[in-house]
Image 1 (tube, rainbow, N blue to C red):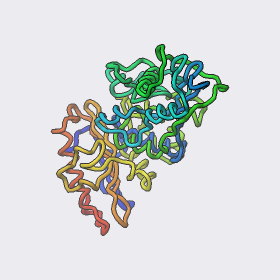
Image 2: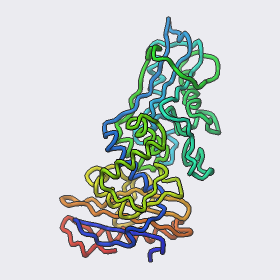
Image 3: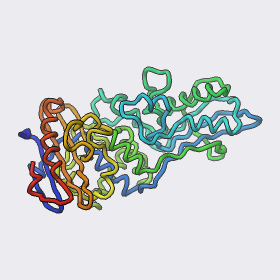
Image 4: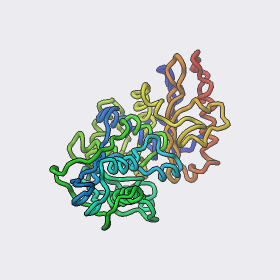
Length: 383
């Protein structure tokens, strides 16, 4: 039995098979990232990339002043060791080691100054005010246009307050391992356009970055995508402007936004709300794109440990969401030669985020959805 505060909607081949409180709004947690994904793909485009730049003046193997590491907003910039130890390893990282190797290949043997992290593309808001403070630095942030390894610097137990310092420290350490000599502590600063570029690192295309965000429920990627939308579309790299872009894109996609309150891009804000109807509209609008960008039941990302012994394993793909007293799931059962089954479920109840409470409901839904085939009889699917 569904909790009193919950919605569930299932549709297939243009027919609504289940609609339990579809237009009542609830706290969605990370399924909110589906809205961020739709808006990013529409406003930035699937081929959009980020560029991290290294600048400085080289003379006879020496950087005569400071070496500048200029952030381009890439949310997947990271060290190899960090990715290797993540709970959900980054799918398409931009390895900082590639930049370090390229700097050495450019002939740099020593740096007269220090490494300066340049973090100007976005604003200086490191954490959203709507997040619980217990999430700061753990679930999300500190945010910035120059951010390596989610802000966790090599050899430091605490994240630096400014992620540009952490990224500069990382590059400092990696260059040291490659024999580059330098003194002085990393700094944050600015750089003149006249300083020449030594090397650049281009990210994976946006569609792969969106996949990372959805499969692994990557909060920092979601929030940096919001700032990037603000920067590109409204020339202002702020969360407020980025959320405005999302609102505009939802309107363009004819998503019903009554009952939708989106205060961040990740879903970490407990005051976010949405309806199952709005989720279904987003999923329907992106039914040709999203299935390949979502976690697979029993196999990958946030669904890797769920549905392992269920009939729907390997077939259902979805975005999940978890907060205290919140559990949600929304996605598809793709079918060969037929339209996918589309579903959304939001559960709000004390303790519902415990496995013993939500998994029986998820598995009951999964069992019903598993009866879908490319020779459909929609009446077979009602949960």
